[in-house]
Image 1 (tube, rainbow, N blue to C red):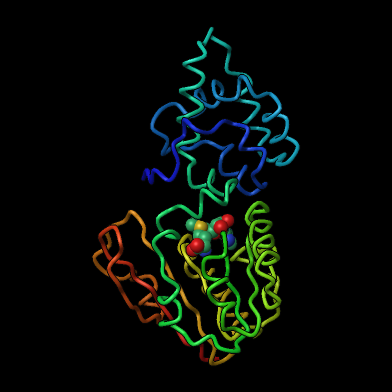
Image 2 (cartoon, protein in one colour; image 1 turned 45 degrees about the horizontal axis):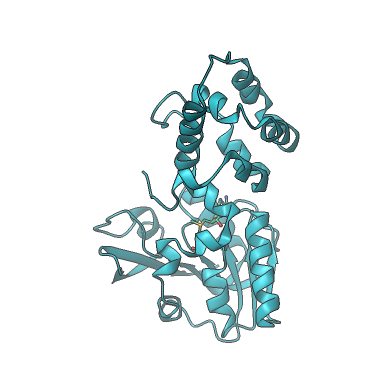
Length: 269
Ligand SMILES: C[S@@+](CC[C@H](N)C(=O)[O-])C[C@H]1O[C@@H](n2cnc3c(N)ncnc32)[C@H](O)[C@@H]1O
């Protein structure tokens, strides 16, 4: 699905220099859903960026095999326009990753731009609680939680986004919020640590394993909260993967039309 969160024409392959190793792994592999010849377009796109090629091979050696195949694509006298068009097409295809390099751009994306913190506070009482926001991004949920919670941890696997949140914490003089690295399938916390674990647009690739991990670090009686914002999917019903795992759901109309479903589940151990 194309989100149009960015216009690929406004970016260059240099943005890859701002991305983390786990994102490079997504970009520098075969992409069967790409509309075109991914390997050929990657060769054209990278032709003028040998430093990006070197960077990716060093930062993510596991991508070297794919990148080696890219290098072997013979130069066929591509025009500047052809190379630029391939570059734009690759960046547009990976727009959801490109925004991780530009937190201010991410802040302007619909699910953050159109969101109201009241939707989080209606779902769960975070007053004086110890809270984790998993895959916090620019901190949409974490900063809202920090207004009332005792302490908020924002775990985020992208360095650019971690630094963005740290700058905002400093600018706002917050003393109850900390930012750290973390991946939803292996979170760096002991069992039974949190009163509430929040997430927005993170759980969904591996429901069983992800929910098991966030349940592990949640206290008995604590809450798992999935608080989404507007997106391009025009959903007509709540996510069965969540409701069948004991989540109750709440919905509201989105600013741009459609329905957003949010979820919560109280943990009993
Ligand atoms: C669509 S953004 C949502 C950001 C934020 N949660 C929000 O709702 O505003 C997805 C976020 O999840 C992070 N992410 C992606 N894969 C992840 C994973 N496996 N574990 C934890 N976070 C992940 C991304 O770095 C990104 O910040």
